Image (tube, rainbow, N blue to C red):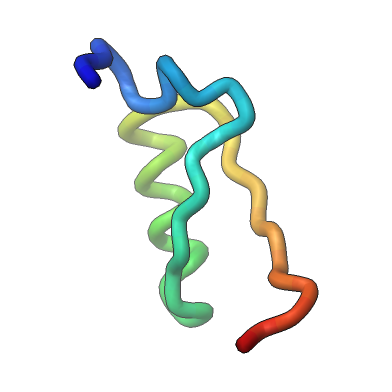
Length: 47
């Protein structure tokens, strides 16, 4: 699908998995480059 911007067709957000030690720099980079807001969501149960 073609989109002009990240998340254009996903109204509930785009889930990303990031290693724990990298989540802050990744979060900052996403907010700076693409705008919007990010939210850390912890898994209820892990495999």
